[in-house]
Image 1 (cartoon, rainbow, N blue to C red):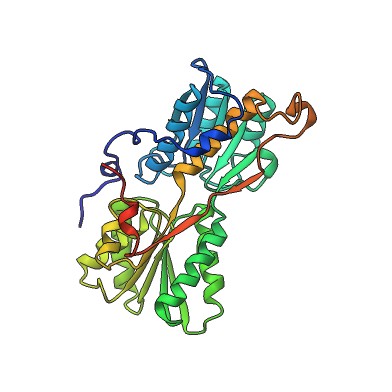
Image 2: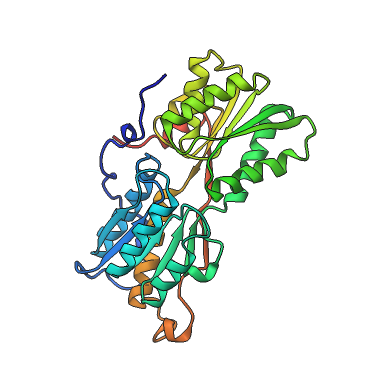
Length: 329
Protein backbone atom coordinates (compact mmCIF):
# COMPACT_ATOMS: atom_id res chain seq x y z
CA UNK A 1 0.00 0.00 0.00
CA UNK A 2 1.17 3.52 -0.73
CA UNK A 3 2.28 5.68 2.18
CA UNK A 4 0.90 8.83 0.60
CA UNK A 5 -0.94 11.07 3.03
CA UNK A 6 -3.05 14.12 2.47
CA UNK A 7 -0.30 16.35 3.78
CA UNK A 8 2.12 14.90 1.21
CA UNK A 9 0.08 16.70 -1.44
CA UNK A 10 0.86 20.11 -0.05
CA UNK A 11 4.32 21.12 -1.21
CA UNK A 12 4.09 24.78 -0.35
CA UNK A 13 1.99 27.90 -0.53
CA UNK A 14 -0.07 28.87 -3.57
CA UNK A 15 1.72 29.86 -6.74
CA UNK A 16 2.77 33.45 -7.37
CA UNK A 17 -0.12 35.53 -8.62
CA UNK A 18 -0.47 35.98 -12.37
CA UNK A 19 -1.97 39.07 -13.94
CA UNK A 20 -5.46 38.30 -15.17
CA UNK A 21 -7.54 40.47 -17.46
CA UNK A 22 -10.40 39.99 -15.02
CA UNK A 23 -8.77 42.62 -12.82
CA UNK A 24 -10.14 45.18 -15.23
CA UNK A 25 -13.63 44.42 -13.92
CA UNK A 26 -12.85 46.58 -10.91
CA UNK A 27 -14.34 49.94 -11.81
CA UNK A 28 -11.98 51.96 -9.62
CA UNK A 29 -8.21 51.73 -9.15
CA UNK A 30 -7.22 49.39 -6.34
CA UNK A 31 -6.51 51.32 -3.16
CA UNK A 32 -4.34 49.76 -0.46
CA UNK A 33 -6.65 48.62 2.32
CA UNK A 34 -4.18 46.77 4.49
CA UNK A 35 -6.50 46.97 7.48
CA UNK A 36 -9.10 44.89 5.61
CA UNK A 37 -9.05 41.12 5.80
CA UNK A 38 -11.04 38.79 3.55
CA UNK A 39 -11.44 35.22 4.74
CA UNK A 40 -11.88 32.05 2.69
CA UNK A 41 -13.16 29.09 4.70
CA UNK A 42 -12.66 25.65 3.17
CA UNK A 43 -14.26 22.33 4.10
CA UNK A 44 -11.01 20.34 3.97
CA UNK A 45 -7.74 22.24 3.66
CA UNK A 46 -5.14 19.48 3.35
CA UNK A 47 -5.70 18.45 -0.27
CA UNK A 48 -3.85 19.74 -3.31
CA UNK A 49 -7.05 20.67 -5.15
CA UNK A 50 -7.32 23.98 -3.28
CA UNK A 51 -3.91 25.26 -4.40
CA UNK A 52 -5.47 26.62 -7.60
CA UNK A 53 -8.15 28.40 -5.60
CA UNK A 54 -5.52 29.84 -3.27
CA UNK A 55 -3.65 31.18 -6.29
CA UNK A 56 -6.76 33.04 -7.43
CA UNK A 57 -7.66 34.22 -3.93
CA UNK A 58 -4.16 35.44 -3.09
CA UNK A 59 -3.73 37.13 -6.48
CA UNK A 60 -7.01 39.02 -6.12
CA UNK A 61 -6.16 40.12 -2.58
CA UNK A 62 -2.76 41.36 -3.77
CA UNK A 63 -4.31 43.25 -6.67
CA UNK A 64 -6.85 44.85 -4.35
CA UNK A 65 -4.34 45.70 -1.65
CA UNK A 66 -6.10 43.71 1.06
CA UNK A 67 -5.21 40.81 3.32
CA UNK A 68 -6.46 37.30 2.67
CA UNK A 69 -6.67 34.37 5.07
CA UNK A 70 -7.45 30.76 4.11
CA UNK A 71 -8.89 28.71 6.98
CA UNK A 72 -10.85 25.57 7.67
CA UNK A 73 -10.55 22.05 9.09
CA UNK A 74 -7.74 19.79 7.86
CA UNK A 75 -10.10 16.82 7.69
CA UNK A 76 -13.48 16.88 5.97
CA UNK A 77 -15.64 17.97 8.90
CA UNK A 78 -18.84 20.06 8.66
CA UNK A 79 -19.05 20.58 12.44
CA UNK A 80 -15.46 21.84 12.61
CA UNK A 81 -16.09 24.12 9.64
CA UNK A 82 -19.12 25.67 11.36
CA UNK A 83 -16.95 26.39 14.40
CA UNK A 84 -14.41 28.19 12.20
CA UNK A 85 -17.23 30.19 10.60
CA UNK A 86 -18.61 31.24 13.99
CA UNK A 87 -15.16 32.39 15.09
CA UNK A 88 -14.74 34.46 11.92
CA UNK A 89 -18.15 36.10 12.25
CA UNK A 90 -17.09 37.26 15.71
CA UNK A 91 -13.93 38.77 14.20
CA UNK A 92 -16.05 40.56 11.56
CA UNK A 93 -13.77 40.43 8.51
CA UNK A 94 -14.40 42.54 5.41
CA UNK A 95 -15.89 39.54 3.63
CA UNK A 96 -16.31 35.77 3.88
CA UNK A 97 -15.93 33.31 1.02
CA UNK A 98 -16.83 29.72 1.87
CA UNK A 99 -16.89 26.26 0.33
CA UNK A 100 -19.57 24.54 2.44
CA UNK A 101 -18.94 21.02 3.74
CA UNK A 102 -22.68 20.49 3.41
CA UNK A 103 -25.46 22.59 1.96
CA UNK A 104 -27.62 23.02 5.08
CA UNK A 105 -25.77 23.41 8.38
CA UNK A 106 -24.19 26.79 7.61
CA UNK A 107 -27.28 28.70 6.52
CA UNK A 108 -28.23 30.35 9.80
CA UNK A 109 -24.66 31.33 10.63
CA UNK A 110 -24.16 32.81 7.16
CA UNK A 111 -27.35 34.83 7.53
CA UNK A 112 -26.05 36.21 10.82
CA UNK A 113 -22.82 37.18 9.10
CA UNK A 114 -24.77 39.09 6.45
CA UNK A 115 -26.94 40.73 9.10
CA UNK A 116 -23.73 41.89 10.78
CA UNK A 117 -22.68 43.63 7.56
CA UNK A 118 -20.24 40.96 6.34
CA UNK A 119 -20.56 40.17 2.62
CA UNK A 120 -20.83 36.42 1.97
CA UNK A 121 -20.07 34.55 -1.26
CA UNK A 122 -20.23 30.76 -1.58
CA UNK A 123 -17.84 28.93 -3.93
CA UNK A 124 -17.65 25.54 -5.64
CA UNK A 125 -20.87 24.14 -4.13
CA UNK A 126 -23.90 26.22 -3.20
CA UNK A 127 -25.93 26.20 0.00
CA UNK A 128 -29.56 25.11 -0.28
CA UNK A 129 -30.90 28.48 0.89
CA UNK A 130 -29.92 31.25 -1.50
CA UNK A 131 -30.84 33.90 1.08
CA UNK A 132 -27.80 32.74 3.09
CA UNK A 133 -25.34 34.24 0.61
CA UNK A 134 -25.19 37.12 -1.87
CA UNK A 135 -23.75 35.05 -4.68
CA UNK A 136 -22.44 31.63 -5.73
CA UNK A 137 -19.34 31.21 -7.89
CA UNK A 138 -18.45 27.79 -9.27
CA UNK A 139 -19.54 25.07 -11.65
CA UNK A 140 -23.08 23.78 -12.06
CA UNK A 141 -22.20 20.46 -10.45
CA UNK A 142 -25.11 18.53 -11.93
CA UNK A 143 -24.21 19.72 -15.42
CA UNK A 144 -20.59 18.75 -14.74
CA UNK A 145 -21.89 15.21 -14.24
CA UNK A 146 -23.99 15.41 -17.40
CA UNK A 147 -20.95 16.48 -19.39
CA UNK A 148 -18.91 13.68 -17.86
CA UNK A 149 -21.67 11.17 -18.54
CA UNK A 150 -21.84 12.14 -22.19
CA UNK A 151 -18.08 11.72 -22.51
CA UNK A 152 -18.27 8.37 -20.71
CA UNK A 153 -20.92 7.07 -23.12
CA UNK A 154 -18.66 7.85 -26.06
CA UNK A 155 -15.67 6.32 -24.28
CA UNK A 156 -17.37 2.97 -23.53
CA UNK A 157 -19.51 2.89 -26.69
CA UNK A 158 -22.68 2.78 -24.60
CA UNK A 159 -21.77 -0.40 -22.67
CA UNK A 160 -20.11 -0.62 -19.23
CA UNK A 161 -20.42 -1.78 -15.64
CA UNK A 162 -19.75 1.32 -13.57
CA UNK A 163 -18.66 2.22 -10.05
CA UNK A 164 -18.33 5.72 -8.54
CA UNK A 165 -15.62 7.01 -6.24
CA UNK A 166 -17.19 9.93 -4.38
CA UNK A 167 -17.75 11.58 -0.97
CA UNK A 168 -20.71 12.67 1.12
CA UNK A 169 -20.43 16.28 -0.08
CA UNK A 170 -23.65 17.23 -1.90
CA UNK A 171 -21.66 18.73 -4.80
CA UNK A 172 -20.13 15.35 -5.51
CA UNK A 173 -23.53 13.72 -5.23
CA UNK A 174 -24.89 16.16 -7.82
CA UNK A 175 -22.07 15.27 -10.20
CA UNK A 176 -22.69 11.55 -9.74
CA UNK A 177 -26.41 12.12 -10.36
CA UNK A 178 -25.63 13.90 -13.61
CA UNK A 179 -23.69 10.86 -14.78
CA UNK A 180 -26.44 8.49 -13.68
CA UNK A 181 -29.15 10.43 -15.47
CA UNK A 182 -27.19 10.19 -18.72
CA UNK A 183 -26.54 6.48 -18.15
CA UNK A 184 -30.28 5.80 -17.69
CA UNK A 185 -30.71 6.26 -21.43
CA UNK A 186 -28.32 3.36 -22.13
CA UNK A 187 -29.56 -0.06 -20.94
CA UNK A 188 -26.10 -1.59 -21.37
CA UNK A 189 -24.57 0.79 -18.84
CA UNK A 190 -25.14 -0.40 -15.27
CA UNK A 191 -24.05 1.28 -12.02
CA UNK A 192 -23.24 -1.40 -9.45
CA UNK A 193 -21.31 0.42 -6.71
CA UNK A 194 -20.65 3.80 -5.13
CA UNK A 195 -17.96 4.21 -2.46
CA UNK A 196 -16.94 7.08 -0.19
CA UNK A 197 -13.22 7.85 -0.36
CA UNK A 198 -13.50 10.83 2.03
CA UNK A 199 -11.35 13.12 -0.15
CA UNK A 200 -8.35 11.31 1.35
CA UNK A 201 -5.68 10.06 -1.11
CA UNK A 202 -4.41 7.22 1.11
CA UNK A 203 -7.88 6.09 2.14
CA UNK A 204 -8.98 6.42 -1.48
CA UNK A 205 -6.30 3.94 -2.54
CA UNK A 206 -7.60 1.49 0.06
CA UNK A 207 -11.26 1.72 -0.92
CA UNK A 208 -10.47 1.65 -4.65
CA UNK A 209 -8.53 -1.58 -4.12
CA UNK A 210 -11.38 -3.02 -2.07
CA UNK A 211 -13.83 -1.96 -4.78
CA UNK A 212 -11.88 -3.81 -7.46
CA UNK A 213 -11.81 -6.93 -5.29
CA UNK A 214 -15.50 -6.78 -4.35
CA UNK A 215 -16.72 -6.02 -7.89
CA UNK A 216 -14.55 -7.80 -10.46
CA UNK A 217 -17.24 -7.12 -13.05
CA UNK A 218 -16.62 -3.36 -12.94
CA UNK A 219 -14.93 -2.08 -16.10
CA UNK A 220 -15.34 1.70 -15.59
CA UNK A 221 -14.62 3.67 -12.41
CA UNK A 222 -15.70 7.31 -12.31
CA UNK A 223 -14.19 9.68 -9.76
CA UNK A 224 -16.22 12.80 -9.01
CA UNK A 225 -13.86 14.65 -6.66
CA UNK A 226 -10.24 15.77 -6.88
CA UNK A 227 -8.62 12.87 -5.03
CA UNK A 228 -10.51 9.96 -6.58
CA UNK A 229 -8.73 9.86 -9.94
CA UNK A 230 -5.17 9.39 -8.71
CA UNK A 231 -6.28 7.01 -5.95
CA UNK A 232 -8.11 4.84 -8.48
CA UNK A 233 -5.22 4.93 -10.94
CA UNK A 234 -2.77 3.78 -8.26
CA UNK A 235 -5.13 0.95 -7.30
CA UNK A 236 -5.39 -0.11 -10.95
CA UNK A 237 -1.62 -0.14 -11.28
CA UNK A 238 -1.07 -2.06 -8.04
CA UNK A 239 -3.70 -4.70 -8.86
CA UNK A 240 -2.56 -5.15 -12.46
CA UNK A 241 -5.87 -3.89 -13.83
CA UNK A 242 -4.60 -0.74 -15.54
CA UNK A 243 -5.73 -0.91 -19.15
CA UNK A 244 -8.40 -3.47 -18.28
CA UNK A 245 -10.62 -1.33 -16.05
CA UNK A 246 -11.24 2.11 -17.48
CA UNK A 247 -11.22 5.31 -15.41
CA UNK A 248 -12.48 8.88 -15.60
CA UNK A 249 -11.56 11.60 -13.11
CA UNK A 250 -12.24 15.11 -11.81
CA UNK A 251 -10.03 18.20 -11.52
CA UNK A 252 -6.33 18.69 -12.36
CA UNK A 253 -4.06 17.63 -9.50
CA UNK A 254 -0.50 17.13 -10.72
CA UNK A 255 -0.28 13.67 -9.18
CA UNK A 256 -3.24 12.56 -11.32
CA UNK A 257 -2.39 14.11 -14.71
CA UNK A 258 0.47 11.67 -15.51
CA UNK A 259 -2.08 8.87 -15.45
CA UNK A 260 -3.89 10.61 -18.30
CA UNK A 261 -0.62 10.81 -20.24
CA UNK A 262 0.01 7.08 -19.83
CA UNK A 263 -3.61 6.10 -20.56
CA UNK A 264 -4.57 4.73 -17.12
CA UNK A 265 -7.15 7.52 -16.88
CA UNK A 266 -9.11 8.41 -20.00
CA UNK A 267 -9.98 12.00 -19.08
CA UNK A 268 -10.74 14.47 -16.33
CA UNK A 269 -13.02 17.47 -15.92
CA UNK A 270 -10.91 20.39 -14.70
CA UNK A 271 -12.62 23.15 -12.77
CA UNK A 272 -11.58 26.74 -13.37
CA UNK A 273 -10.60 27.17 -9.73
CA UNK A 274 -8.18 30.08 -10.10
CA UNK A 275 -10.90 32.05 -11.84
CA UNK A 276 -13.51 30.92 -9.30
CA UNK A 277 -11.76 32.27 -6.22
CA UNK A 278 -10.45 35.32 -8.08
CA UNK A 279 -13.96 36.37 -9.06
CA UNK A 280 -15.43 35.61 -5.64
CA UNK A 281 -12.82 37.79 -3.94
CA UNK A 282 -13.57 40.68 -6.28
CA UNK A 283 -17.30 40.25 -5.64
CA UNK A 284 -16.72 40.51 -1.88
CA UNK A 285 -14.64 43.64 -2.39
CA UNK A 286 -17.28 45.22 -4.62
CA UNK A 287 -19.97 44.55 -2.03
CA UNK A 288 -17.85 45.88 0.84
CA UNK A 289 -17.04 49.09 -1.05
CA UNK A 290 -20.32 49.57 -2.93
CA UNK A 291 -18.10 49.65 -6.04
CA UNK A 292 -20.71 48.98 -8.72
CA UNK A 293 -22.41 52.40 -9.15
CA UNK A 294 -26.01 51.21 -9.51
CA UNK A 295 -27.21 52.55 -6.14
CA UNK A 296 -25.85 54.93 -3.51
CA UNK A 297 -26.21 51.99 -1.09
CA UNK A 298 -27.05 48.52 -2.40
CA UNK A 299 -27.93 47.30 1.12
CA UNK A 300 -30.65 49.93 1.55
CA UNK A 301 -31.90 49.15 -1.95
CA UNK A 302 -31.89 45.42 -1.19
CA UNK A 303 -30.03 44.82 -4.45
CA UNK A 304 -26.56 43.28 -4.01
CA UNK A 305 -24.52 44.18 -7.08
CA UNK A 306 -23.05 40.80 -7.96
CA UNK A 307 -24.57 37.93 -9.94
CA UNK A 308 -26.59 35.48 -7.89
CA UNK A 309 -24.91 32.61 -9.77
CA UNK A 310 -21.64 32.73 -11.70
CA UNK A 311 -20.99 29.44 -13.52
CA UNK A 312 -17.23 29.05 -14.01
CA UNK A 313 -17.60 25.70 -15.77
CA UNK A 314 -15.14 22.86 -16.41
CA UNK A 315 -12.78 21.83 -19.22
CA UNK A 316 -12.41 18.30 -20.59
CA UNK A 317 -8.77 17.20 -20.29
CA UNK A 318 -7.49 14.24 -22.34
CA UNK A 319 -4.15 13.06 -23.72
CA UNK A 320 -4.53 15.69 -26.44
CA UNK A 321 -4.36 18.71 -24.10
CA UNK A 322 -3.14 17.38 -20.73
CA UNK A 323 0.31 18.99 -21.03
CA UNK A 324 -1.27 22.43 -20.72
CA UNK A 325 -2.80 21.58 -17.33
CA UNK A 326 0.30 20.73 -15.34
CA UNK A 327 1.14 23.48 -12.88
CA UNK A 328 4.22 25.55 -13.49
CA UNK A 329 7.12 24.67 -11.20
